[in-house]
Length: 437
Image (cartoon, rainbow, N blue to C red; front, top):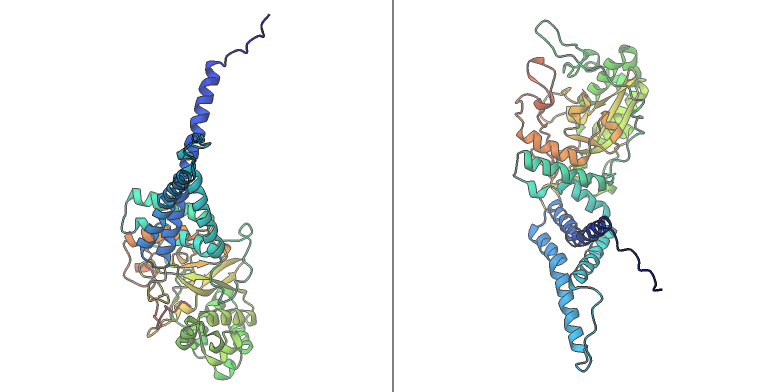
């Protein structure tokens, strides 16, 4: 008897094998396109982030694919032809030309990505998160916004960079799950009156703070004890501390110039004691003085670092004189009142050639994150903390929104603010950077 023949594969198995083979073939070919496409996206985002020409990024992209892979294939074919023995039949290639192109593309682009990420990982991923949507510049509408949302969402998955630590680290952030949040304010009507304790508070400086005797201002402790004894309400005491800082301090532009020049050796100390006696500071000094006064006055005030930016203008210039696309390092505070945290930026409430304001005193978190993004996301004090990519999206939305022409972040006629009413604050300018540093 002859050996029994195996049963032929069923139609269903043939179909599955056909689909599987073509699926993996398509996936294999897709890598030849997607990997260099990611490399080009990275290179072009770095170019946009560094204010370099996009022609350089385009040249890099064309070299990554198809330039170098095709050049490598042609060179290999030339060497093979040159070294071939005309008397012997040519060896059959193990891989098809297309397969070789895929492998060469992956090797070249893999090497490019490895070198880029090895030497500039933080900058590369930050460039994707900040300028990964450069191709959407100047385009508005549902399609560009959807595309922008998608690529910035992808970029945010990569970005883990810490911001410039020139102002030190933030104090320990609260646990988002344990954080108490202030009650939502109800919209005002004609019959209702604005709660004087609600944001924005009255800009008037309390006479107790304004007319504080000089001998009571001899030290941080004496000021703190003075305010504690005269303001039993914690919220009003926190406002008194804020008002003392913005009325006694002036912004140190000379120190800012030294910081921008990285001349830290000659930059005046920003420790609370030093700025208290000097009566001059940059944002770090303002924020550290708030913390020290709060400690003396029995008010829990935390130190927060991050960066600030303006959706209509960039907040500073880089070393080439081009706009700084990421923002400016900054320091501000959070104050704990009645068990929940609220946000304060005394630096931005102390404007040049103007009266102190309360715009950044207990500012609602959903509004402050329009121009302040803390290093520790928990200090956003939001249930839905935003990422850098979402901040970029909000920039585009804010540019299209109608802005109030009144005070930054305030609405007209005493009405509670709404996200659509937000107008980015115009900060006072230093010689090379905005005073936010």
